[in-house]
Length: 268
Image (cartoon, rainbow, N blue to C red; front, top):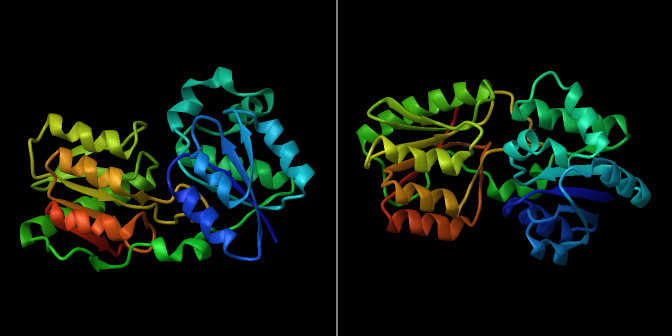
């Protein structure tokens, strides 16, 4: 089977590409210049595109007869909204048709648009199952009762925010919401929280209630953990089964070393 990977930034596309390269499937990678990690080239035939070259991407995939697609990695929401001039006519036409410009609407719209062209988006989860966060405390260090109360409170709020497609992350302390992720993304949301609290914040991240695992799945990695350490945060909680954890071994080792318990929370 031919599999096409539309790759944004970050490590998740690399993990997927590596996993597919170890199967009998033929992988074609469609990477974004100045965004996608160049090391992805070692996992499959790679084609580079400038941001917004929608028609060129479609034409290339047709020429290669790639039908099954996966879209992974970060493509900044702000880049789409504030760099309209970089989009080709096909991309501008698409953006003008969607009902609103929330991240979910744009990403779902991209999938629908490409499916109209005859492409099929497949669920990448079978290739990434080992990255999904399980339920329970993942670190040796455990959160105390006070932290667990903040985790329960924060995860409920994070779920509501995710459902509204505002963001996936909230930062809380003493059952007070300190920061909510918006267009700036998770990392800057975490860093912004230190403007209001000097230490003790709990970071909570959740997926939408009906999360489409084909796109925009929550991801945590070393950068997330490093930013929590910078703000002297006390814990990180994420939704189990719907969040990818990158560099698991080093991530959990450092979390224990830095005194940051990591908790997988099952949500309805």
